[in-house]
Image 1 (cartoon, rainbow, N blue to C red):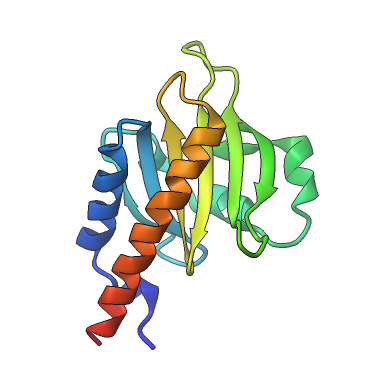
Image 2: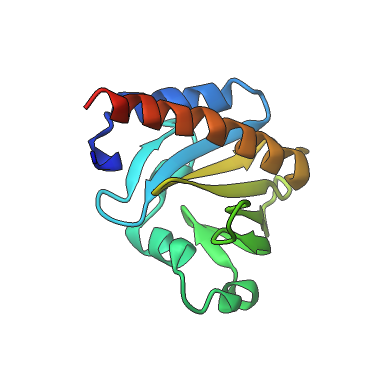
Length: 153
């Protein structure tokens, strides 16, 4: 079976563009739990600055309960963990909210799609619930793109 990492950056960028066109989010990235870590991101957002360390902390499988206490930093922005079902079968999402921002807090959703993760930041005023639902919907399109790509090999 082909590796997810073999999918071209262009395919990942198309997924990011598709999500941003929904008008619900202002930033997005596709990450993985191994190098190159950041597969694609919105160049005008902040998530392109996600570090390897931030990604590893976000995607850790053991001891996730401490993330509720310590919070999570994404591209230098501190976030509160609201709901963590990232490794729950059938859900695979995580909801966060930025904190300490002068421009107000923003909802962030992380969703697992096969062996990659979509990270999306909502527009100011977008609530976490609708953002999570939209991310879940978009994950279906991304999953389809992955399977179409794999079918060609």
